[in-house]
Length: 390
Image 1 (tube, rainbow, N blue to C red):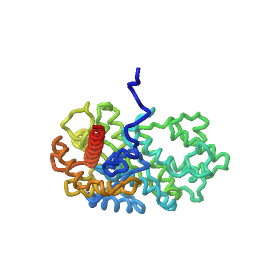
Image 2 (spheres, helix red, strand yellow):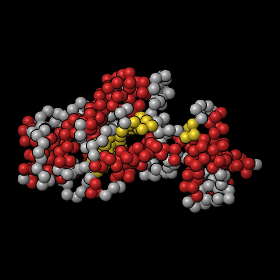
Image 3 (tube, helix red, strand yellow):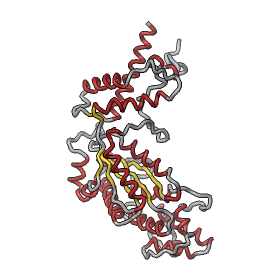
Image 4 (cartoon, helix red, strand yellow):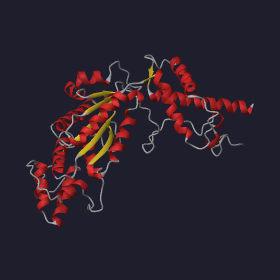
């Protein structure tokens, strides 16, 4: 019996699959790898990017209000946040800044926690070879800072204990602090030594404790600013979140916004879409309507400093496509004389999107345009293969 499945061969090698179109690969295939962000067309975003750039620069020197980025699903919010993260983390270490990206739908053995996102951002500051095992690097730097802490808060008192201890005691106390921040239970003796009692509640208590810690770290000149980007706030309105779980997350988010407004050294970026993209969740209410009705105090804070990312209109579609074709032209096996112009691809995609009623406002998200273009490329390749066989 002949094999009905053949996974070991293909009709065309990948390198030659798109040769009939003069392309080395499908240039419109959406990339999801953070290490390769791919092309980025920005002309339709000039106003939004100018505001964000001013805010990012200001955050290096000043306390800034959190900024919200709002835009339809597929408009490019995540792509932009990842680019911001990369550029911040590429800055010289003398700036004492670090950027962290987190999604509200974070999965794993732990439930999403706003405080946990802040803690992980603190832990992501560059590690050096001088930090003992089990200690967060910036905490160890603060424990050894020549600057005496003046804060009389809980974290200020703990930091003073660390600074005044000898080296062995300093390491032990620093480990106890880090264990406590990770919600480990300390013994009575350990609690007395470090001055921390009870198990830390990762909801409600953690955001304010970490804000206090960050103010201590800034006083020691260990950090200047943490840029924390929290994406996909709309996901809390998916059916997988109970009302209690949603309330805890959004209440902690409001607390975080407040401690930032009060001076915690966090440059906070919050992103969401007006739609909740879930086929199981059919509702006429937008994310904004949910927030404004159910969490008005949070919504008022989210909209104080909001930047909206627009969709692509037909005018910008052609140069958008050209950016992706130019990226493909730098690869081997690109044959310019065979490649269709950007206007050809836009015409075909716009017609298909129109037939599918995906552009009711005559605008389209980059994701929808790219996925449609990718589909068209694959269809043309498949059709050319059929004709070749016949």
